[in-house]
Each structure stands twice: as C-alpha cells, then as structure tokens.
Length: 238
Image 1 (cartoon, rainbow, N blue to C red):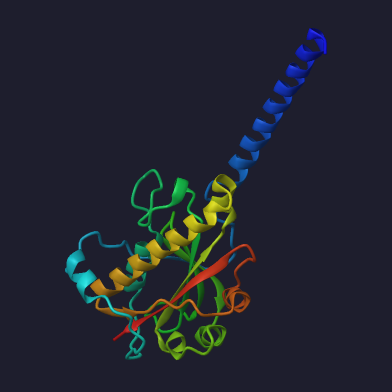
Image 2: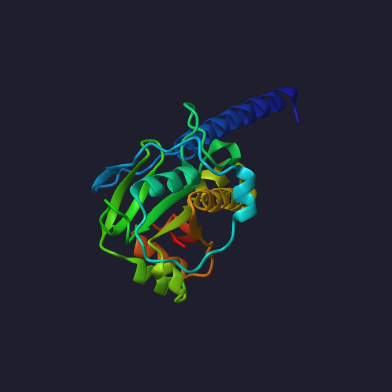
C-alpha cells in the first residue's frame, strides 16, 4: 500500500472518529441530564423541610424497624414534606440531593399515593425535587389498587400514604452502560433507607415492599413506561 493511500486512510479514520465523538456528546447532552417532563395537574407547594430534628441519627438507626400495622390516623403535610425531602430532596444549589447518585444523573422518580393526609386530597402525586412540590397526576384514593398490584399486601392499603420509588434506567446507562443498572439499584436503596430513617425520626412506621407487578403499579400511578417501579413504601402512624 502506498504512503499516499495510507495517509488518506488515516485522515478518513480521523474524521470518522470526530463525527462519532460529536454524535456521542450530542446524545449524551440530550439524554443524561435530569429533565422532569412537563405534567398537567394541580401543583401543591410543600412546607419547607426541617434540617434539624429531635432524634439523632444514631437513635434512628437503633430504632428503625419494618412496621406493617398503622393506627389509621392521618399524616400531616409537614410529615409528607419531610419524607419526600429525605428521599430525593435538593441539598445544594448545584442540585445535589439527599441520596448519592452515580455521575450525578439522578434516575429516580418519587410518587406519593395519598389517602389520609391532612390538607391533601386523596390521589397520586409526583414529587418535584427542584421546587419541593407535588403535582397531581391521578385523582382519587388509589391505595386499594396499589394493594392489589402489590399482591394484596394489606399494609399498602391501610397506610395513610404510600411512597413509590421508580427509576428511569436510561439516565444512568447512557453513561455507564449495563453497569449503570447496578448503580440505579444502589441509589434506590440509598433513597429508601433515607425514608426509613426519616420516618423513624418522625415517630412513624414504614416498610419496604418489593413484591408487586411492575406494569400494574405503573398503571395505578399513571407513570410513563420508561419509569420502572423499584419500591413501594407504606407510611403511617404506629
């Protein structure tokens, strides 16, 4: 092969490499950042979360238990605010949250299935961390439907509210490939433990539920198909 042919081939390969790199950067920029879809519905501003509580971290760790029986008394909007902030609240002007996220890509979405919450109509709400607010996506009490989707686990129905954690895997796998699936699951565990400890600190009971039909949970929540449910967490007074 002549030097001229080799030179031309190297130039072509270089140009092709630049094109592929540019394409990757374009798609990464479009898909990776946290972008909440525009939703239509009633927006409810949540009370400002407290950053200093009455129970130490060590006490919360000591007292944390899985609780499946509740008194039926309603939760307050302040308690809901604190629980959702613990799950995915913003803790820094740069957008960092209460739970660590691989690459800062934040694949989790958090829903609230409200039944007995003072000052909040029964329905399904999506948490918006950036504004610390809720947006209603389904009207009416859906705890019974969620209980059915969770194989009839009655604590899902009897809790005052259920927190549901879902994930958009593509936000993380776009950067980390299949390994990103593991990172998403780790992150969901971080968020769920935050909720468990916050509930304990508030004197509330919760339990992590992983047995459910994914498609049925999505239907109950009115969630898009790319949001995959990972946890259902009933919360109530014990």
